[in-house]
Amino acid sequence: MPDFKRLLHSHEFHLAALTLLLVAGLTVASEDFMTLGNIFDMTVSSAILGIMACGLFVVLIAGGIDISFPATASIAQYLTASYILANGGNFPLAFAMAAAIGILLGMINAALVYKLKVPAIIITIAMLNVYFGALIYFSNGEWLYGFDDWFMNGVEVLPFVGSDGYDYALNLPIMVLLGTIAITSLLMGKTRIGRQIYAIGGNADAASRIGVNLFGLNLFVYGYMGALAGIAAIVQMQITQSVAPNALMGFELGVLAAVILGGTSMNGGKGSLLGVILGVALLAILKNGLTLLGVPSYWHTVVTGLIILLSISITALNEKQQAKKAI
Image 1 (tube, rainbow, N blue to C red):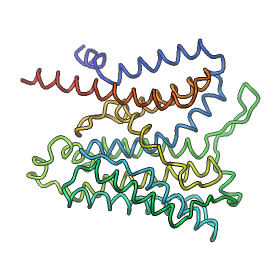
Image 2 (cartoon, rainbow, N blue to C red; image 1 turned 180 degrees about the horizontal axis):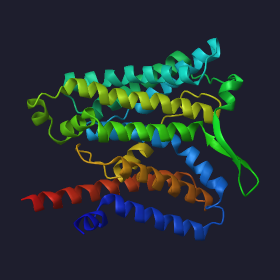
Image 3 (cartoon, rainbow, N blue to C red; image 1 turned 90 degrees about the horizontal axis):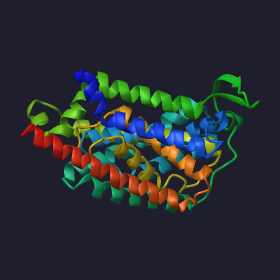
Image 4 (cartoon, helix red, strand yellow; image 1 turned 180 degrees about the vertical axis):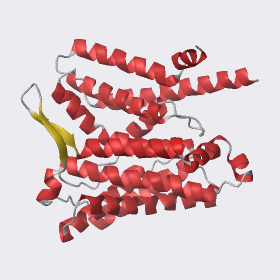
């Protein structure tokens, strides 16, 4: 019974209930919402958001924050695309190359944050502009396209024909999203590194006193964010079949909204991957619903900003209540 009561009062339960209510409302409001084609398209389009959200979740749990990941993703995407256009390749090579570039740029962020002792949000906003400015300068803002068939066709498994007569399959974006969720869940829930990440987010000084390598873990979490940013960039490139230097800029707002909405604390040490997944799902459903209802796109940004504000406020109030109970 205590476990059931704890479940009813959990942030994840409330978020799941809100998501179900939103689904029910949109099902009534739009006959297209619950169609297989719309659900499939919504899942594919939210894959990039979900992959990046897993990376930002790990950074926030560690007590940090990264705003520069859209620029990291853009650089990884552009360099990888340039290479495979010139030399050919395959998906394992593309993902490995983009992830390696992302890890390098993420570790630069970690080193600056740790060594300069400047708030991470300031460092990563600065690096967002440095990375993006450098990309625009060296690329001259040129688009890339004309990829080989192996890239254009993607990867599909378990194909089937839906009741609407269209072909569907478990495609590359969905498989990468599921793989990212599985790896992040294993990392944060089953490994010593995951426990240490929670520990430094909860109390970095105490974690340091028991022998946790703070600098090494910072390199790891920002590198992990960079790797997932690079991987998400390849997924986005395969979906759009082209590369624009600025295509991924602006993703930071939606990703941050999903993670905060999922209940991850901005102060570090608190949050769950399940909450992040529910946050991504709620945002994807909300955006899709607004589109189906014909709401202008600029309102999507307004709603996302309001969700971030509301989520941070609710999380802050919950933390205050828990602190009072502890006293």
